[in-house]
Length: 367
Image (tube, helix red, strand yellow):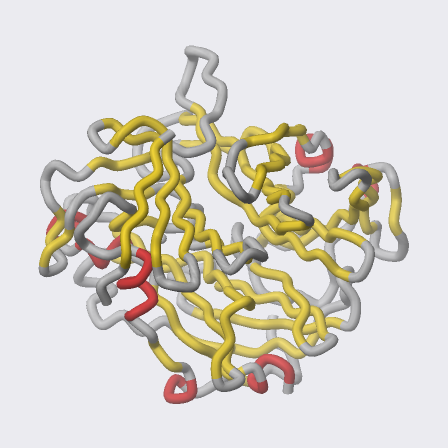
């Protein structure tokens, strides 16, 4: 595994009305292109394109940004070099307080591959896409979703399972991993949002609900025993159960929740943020609750994606991510992922595969 550190000079899955729904005007959301420049500088030995953009505070002055798939290779004037390398799976970028970047992947720049590799069976390629996680006492607790290739095209893959990894924060080396069997027992894709809260860890995931023709959210709760997750229980709509098959959806979420979404605590409220999974997935919504298991309410349209060349560039936008460790002027940092159905365009216009960062006023989520 190689690591390249350099100083900064200056997007997974594509993813009902409510009486108290309201929206933030576009003018109140502050776009911030410099964040992408910081994380994906065009020249150097790091990631210059990707999706996912899931972040975790490493609790030592550094922050981890995890990419689903990614590109390595120079970008000049939004043009990607023809010898750029594409990596299927996860790569990591760590940014410190000075703006220095550390890129984590396997292999070398001539033949890079995912940082956390999935075991192969010789049948079809398998890989991990990153979920969410948290840090406790020097250990990164990280959920990863394993997928395999089952067909051609951009969506020729299927979900296999959820694995839980522990990594040493200082070295970013894997300590151990454990499969989460509940994901295959009840069909919930656990680990796409993880929230430490009070004395427990809450692990959220979506499940396709054929009766509602949308994806709904479920939650598990676990304890840390010797700094390892244990004693998993599952919310059944009224209480916590040891039987994973008793899980029930969380109430109050009216929209089709994206595969990757966010749950975090903010000013004594539990906040869930998701990009609409239906249609062109341009609307970004928030909900709040008084407890991790809901019920959720207070639906708000925070932002509607406005990409001027959306149709011309055959764009898709998806899986908004919140970065609650970054706040300024009572605004919270978010981003949405960008991609294109026209794959040759990612070389002609590199920004078509780079996230868009923006700041949302906290008051517009909570009030």
